[in-house]
Length: 57
Image 1 (cartoon, rainbow, N blue to C red):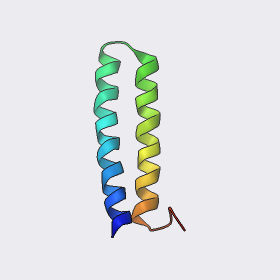
Image 2: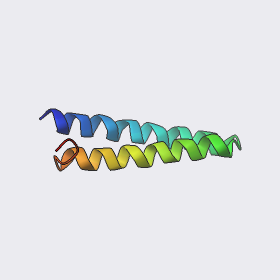
Image 3: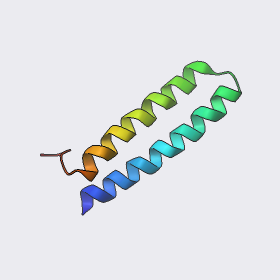
């Protein structure tokens, strides 16, 4: 149960990172936008692992 909560939390953080990345692309801060996109991708991978219960095995 707690792993699926962790997966949901990281998925929410991934969505927040995508929103922040779109804002930084509009302001033409491409380095910061790339960092936000990498963080969103990492959060996506972590949430997939947490939902399938294979992150901490």
